[in-house]
Image 1 (cartoon, one colour):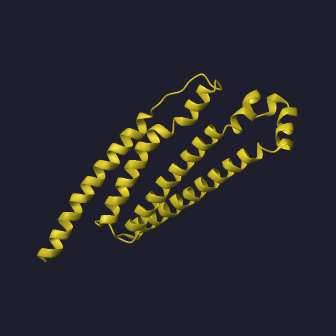
Image 2 (tube, helix red, strand yellow):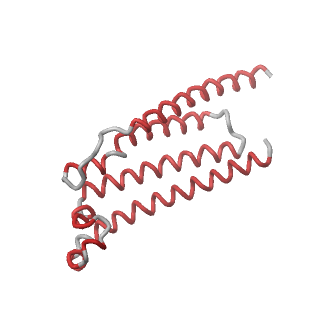
Image 3 (cartoon, one colour):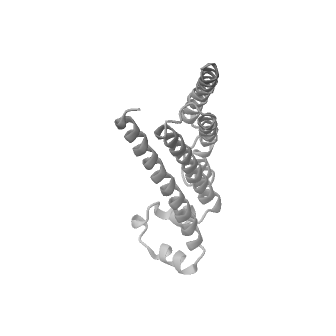
Length: 173
């Protein structure tokens, strides 16, 4: 493997590792903000603030104190974090020249499954906000994630066949 290619895999491994950490941090931060909304001093501060200065206007407190909305956001961040974690794992294997291994097939299948879950989960915050009449528009399914999941799943099947061929080649040599 060329050194530049290995460096690219190493760089992508670090990027996805960083993104995993960011998603975990954002998940914890969202939960902390939700917990803060339970403190009277916080709700008084929001209530006395100028509505134009609040990120969501008059609905700010309603949005950040909704457990269903916050949990759906946290679930999304956790799912994105899991996708980044598995992508990092994949690039780590590529960096170590472990291409035709069963772990890569399993990792690709996990990413495909997570993308299918994200097809619905990514729309949950908007759906909850719409149901709470905080926004006027929502959808139940993001087709982009379904397409990506299908492509990643197909690649996992190709990788699975390539693993079988690589194993057969090792046995004949």
